[in-house]
Length: 162
Figure 1 (cartoon, rainbow, N blue to C red):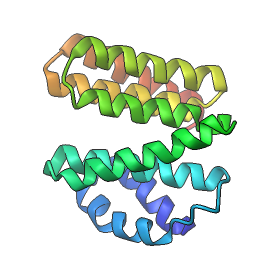
Figure 2 (figure 1 turned 60 degrees about the horizontal axis):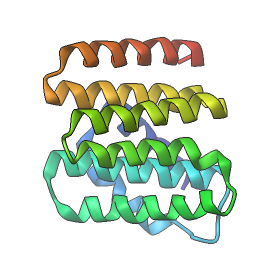
Figure 3 (figure 1 turned 90 degrees about the vertical axis):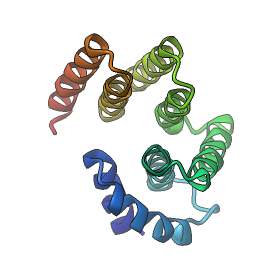
Figure 4 (figure 1 turned 45 degrees about the vertical axis):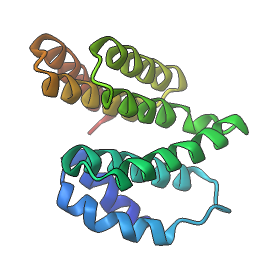
């Protein structure tokens, strides 16, 4: 399970949609609702993010439904006090906002995700949120926001040590 989570995380980082499609069924079969620890949070978060990425590529609604279901799982964990999941939840909510296509909503959602990650001390998630924001604005053709968020992401990944 940890190896599959690592592969999924790397596929998300590198935008490898073929690997994501191959790994999603593996992750689904290895998920155990009784396990709520940091590795589970990371696994579920990247599984949801992978579902959103695959949905963007394929437009298959089953992936969006899966992402929403996993996001609700993380929402439950946050409501029960697991603050480690806050930044991940904010990123997933921002991913959902990208599906609406409204630049202001997208920017507000990603800025919130970046700020939550910064407040909680998760530089890696702050960098991921900035990168995802930059890629969302690239799809919208907004060069100014694309450049700003991607540069912020590069700086954050460097601060994190990546």
